[in-house]
Image (cartoon, rainbow, N blue to C red; front, side, top):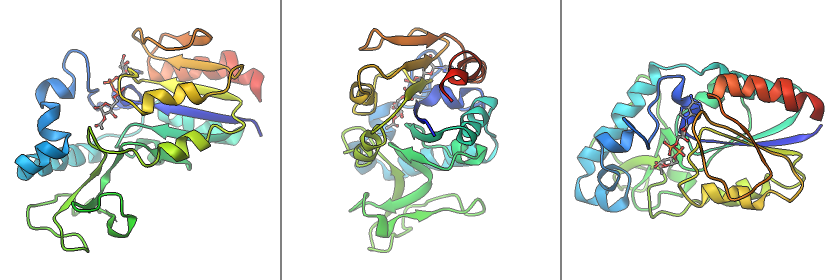
Length: 234
Ligand code: OAD
């Protein structure tokens, strides 16, 4: 089977009703990044940060995967697929994707405040027990915190993402402004000559010239990618 790696960002989930981060009305307009997505913000006001992610977790219960997520999942019928996502939602998995690397963590998981990357202390929350409160402790006795990679923190799964590119036959980028590193740098590891497709309704600047741009939303764009390009790759 040919191998496809797909890098997704907030635009992938936009049609499911989850806000993107940048641009008019993005999440970072309403909530300052420094307050809710940095270790410093967490230290300054843990309650505010826990509350922010509690709210986003509850929002996740009300949304469903969109056609774009479904089309990505269906690719597994014909290809070996790795989804590398910057999204912390679980919509790829809920649509049926089985091989998802969450570079920026997962909203439905919590971890230790002392050792956020120690998987021994990572727990998955259940839908009927979504909120994390001040005083809820991880197994190492530290405050439970969201299993989210904040700005300034390392991205341990980047290594896995880079490894997934070994022997790749096509690389697809969907719904990311490619502003945040190291995730955006994944494109630089795609071997020369491998076709790269980018699906986004807005202009995104990329470091390579040989990129086929499909200027559409995730659902329509995925359909076009399958009909016009991946069909030939099978
Ligand atoms: P951004 O909000 O920066 O970019 C979203 C992209 O999605 C933009 O290029 C939009 O044009 C595009 N978009 C909007 N609607 C779309 C649709 N219907 N279909 C497809 N694309 C659409 O989000 P990311 O690039 O994902 O990190 O942001 C990267 C990281 O920055 C996030 O993971 C998050 C954030 O700060 C952390 O929280 C650590």
